[in-house]
Image (cartoon, rainbow, N blue to C red; front, side, top):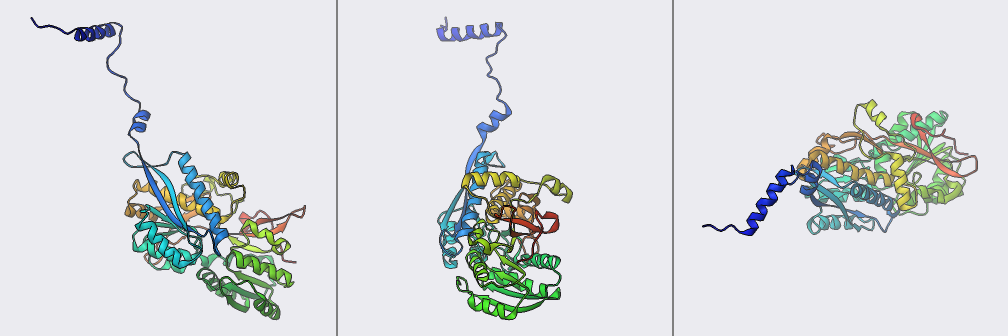
Length: 431
């Protein structure tokens, strides 16, 4: 006679009782959400770049890095970037101080790729540093999104892996010339004084013939070395030529100093437009020297890019709003964002969208996804050239122009004055 173990009897009885009570021994099936949660694979996404924590580009670079950091925070809070095979990418950033030096950029981007094994790259700030990084990125077949570089020349070298968020330099001052002539059609003589770096040179290389094509006479056309602090030789030439307007500049430090010295020398130009410095909130540190100065900006807090605007253009809207970005940035860093801040965030946002479209971290698939992007974000319309020579160059984003004006209480602040459909205040002639 075969013996039945007590444990077997007990199991059988439990089964009978469960059946009698309408129960089941089969555990409930997991829901779709619990299945997805259980199966999801979290993967680090390491993004490398250099930042000018010291050196001439420190101010704008710091803002750009803060924008990148905020993007990482937002993606992390949202649960990461979801791609194929139920993989969730959690971004981390790895960066070094490039000291605003091109040779350090080359060495550090090589280190980021070969030693740190980063997955993707963002750019440093300033066109000369971006070009150095781009060469290394391209040689290694690494996708890099450039936020701080607007130089046309870099984006006309036939690179395959570099994608430019900023409006190219050739368009930086052409709108300022249009604004100037709309504001005062009697302006005839213009002085151009600019930093002799790649970015500023690209700007004036386009602005000078554009001005001449509008019937303006360029009475001064001078360049100065990066790091210049004494503009008296140039100011003396400007005074002697008696121009109606002055355009040019370079980056934050030289542009700020130039504006201050023009004010101190009481130069009587009716219109002044300078690169980079005026849109930066700390330009107000020069006090009344800032008043009436115009500057081209990639983005301002007053912009109204929206889903409705995207719908009008027949393109999708992606990501946060300008209002939410500004609020989050101000809360995190206790200061308002500049366009450099917005550019850093937008660079991360573009990488995020390309990864989602590619559903992969494969460099070639992500590169192909960038080629197809055509969308509106809080930063504006973004689309990249797919032509062989200009591949990755920004072809959709437009500049806005700000002017430092005093409100009714006498407080200095920036207002968007051009284009007219985007203005928050009327432009004024310098007094």
